Amino acid sequence: KAGVTQTPRYLIKTRGQQVTLSCSPISGHRSVSWYQQTPGQGLQFLFEYFSETQRNKGNFPGRFSGRQFSNSRSEMNVSTLELGDSALYLCASASMGGASTDTQYFGPGTRLTVL
Amino acid sequence: GENVEQHPSTLSVQEGDSAVIKCTYSDSASNYFPWYKQELGKRPQLIIDIRSNVGEKKDQRIAVTLNKTAKHFSLHITETQPEDSAVYFCAASGGSNYKLTFGKGTLLTVNP
Image (tube, rainbow over all chains, first blue to last red; front, side):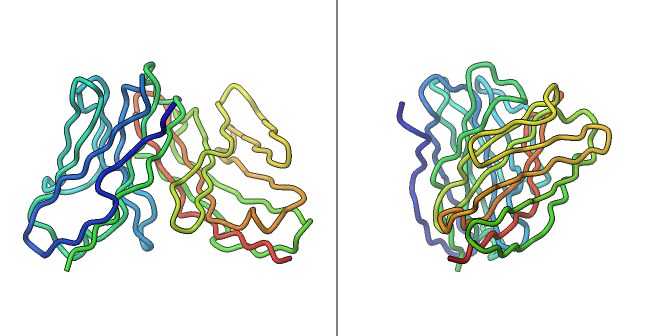
């Protein structure tokens, strides 16, 4: 099976702009999670979707939003970008069961730089 | 919410030595504990995981132990090799909490 894919791999934006990142899970997986990775804060959970429903959300401002489509692909959006949003954004997919104990497989990430 | 503490933050060993990384968690409802390895510029890769009905799990040179009473779990790597050099993350999840809470990571350097 093909792994988790993310597009684009790199993005450069300026403050105030908005950005949309995309994640395609492993075929058959219905759970998609998003994480922000920075050198100072490590890996922080943004949100998780299962069958188009957001089941959990991390402690991020409302500028961060996401959605999941019927084919399980997911997008996340960040509006009004700030310098501190520069990070590696990782998505991870998990199996059809969608249990909290299912193994999560990560994509390669999108490197976002905000100038 | 869940909090995961990971120690040490850096670890340097000689090739062939063992390496141990320890994590503690706060939420007694957590019942799934994966370990990920992330090489520079690469995605995190699952190397081993353990669920709370098991106390220890081994996979070749890698083992994980879990003490639910004390709320801590550890990664053991034996006969380390230079290619084991990477950042290792522990994580916890469980119950109705559909998210992984990660430790801050351990930079492991294996010196030839």
